[in-house]
Image (tube, rainbow over all chains, first blue to last red):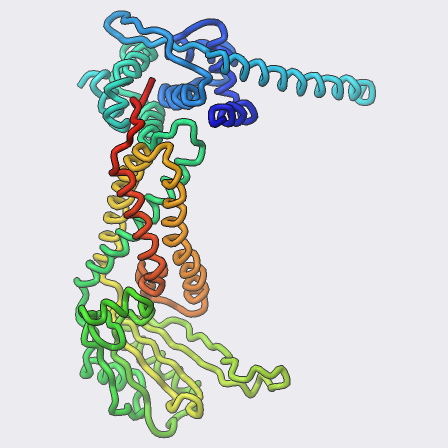
Length: 119
Length: 354
């Protein structure tokens, strides 16, 4: 019950960085630096996550059950922990994507209708 | 110092258990993201890490409001600490004016006016019912009569008929006070509403005029009233302004108190995660601590705008203390129960991170 309430809150109040992190992880497990790079790419460099912000978000998403640790590896003496989407996280991303698609479609319809009048 | 070491220092903003679990991982990410040749974290990076670390200390990662509660708790604790320190710093003040000093100032400002014999002086910087705070009066202070705790003053009034009209007396006083080195503020007048009946003629209502002046650490307040209502046409009070040490001491102590409160709040927040009565206790604490602040601040702000204040009212009065000390005590009791709850070991203790 509690978990589902958190899930509902996460889906209905998803902010852009959260959406981008989940989208980054939809491509497969990634470590922190990989997520930052992927978010930068996905947003065409409009959103640049700082490490503190990323880990605050990862902690929240983990507590909400949307993300979970995958594996660890050490590269050049540096610890890298990978994260992956959970099935709940995948559902949340699908729901948010559908919501954004519906909004985009509605906006496009209005804009199409506007064009002849402004021409 | 290497970049890694500087990053590690910034990671001290995170709680120890979290650093043990994730410190190396975050450090690895920071080093991965740092361009070659960088020797120091950027300011933006540092601020972001400290902010995230302080947020992390609060636990409850899914909560979007815990930060607001922490700020409210830290702020009120900082204000209380600052107020306590301000009271301590007041001890650097000279004693309140004695009879000789009062008489000299009265004679200086109001020549030709007769000073009544019953000049009162304060036995301490702050008094309750005209007496220094003692163990016996502590009960009154804490249990309902806190509003009687106020700054002491030397006070007296003129006796006999007014030798010159009020306007002339006022002008002479301003002139003589300025000549004696006092900073004289513009007098303020207020019509006293002594008649509630709307048919009363406003012009017949008594007018109270207040003259305020300051010289060094001493503030003079002369009040011109209708002698038929107040027994004297002129009342004068002399008291000390806040000594210079009060402001810096209060600010420093307030910052330290706020920081300590944040850490204690964070510890209690992590320890009480999932315990249902913790938010209730926190709500009670903050309600009983903040309500007096809101009431007192709005009232004092209006009062400050009404007449000049060369020396502001002490910080604790802005916090509604000790006037509403019962509110403070209820809040304190609730805070102590909350801390005791946090001290109680949890049965369902889980690691901080997955």
